[in-house]
Image (cartoon, rainbow, N blue to C red; front, top):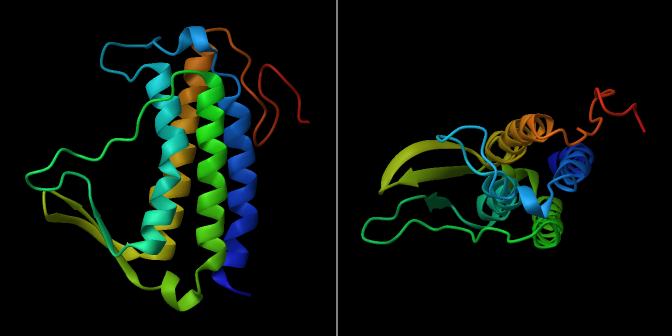
Amino acid sequence: MALSKALLPEFDHEMANTRRTLERVPDDKFDWKPHEKSWAMGELASHIANILTWAVKAINQDSLDMAPPGEPPPRAPLAASQQQLLERFDKNVVAARAAIEGASDEHLFQPWTLLSGGEKVFTLPRIAVLRSAVMNHSIHHRAQLGVYLRLNDIPVPSLYGPSADESMM
């Protein structure tokens, strides 16, 4: 079985769980922060929706510089509403899924490099970037968002088992 075919069921499952979490972010809480050092809820949710663009970059580019020398760092725009957030997420899921689906095993084993200011942060096979910098990174921030929801008395969705707010669907 091709690596992409093995990865896609997990990707689909995690993206469905992520969307169910993002659906809970209310427009009137986009500016809420649990702490002054934390991102606002809208910033965190937007980051989660935008993480998926890294899947396309990891497959279609050989590297990415997060802080290119002499240029402003690339920044995805923040969503202004739940509707915009979900539209962006859905669009990014479709693009990421298509990129993964079209990647051969040979290509997925090719190295990809993350740079900052022209300096190498890491080099990993593209398949490892998809698992760590895309999927695991997304799941990590989705868990943070679950805490934000809990602290605002917004029901947390069941993801891998029942939550305190709902049983498994």
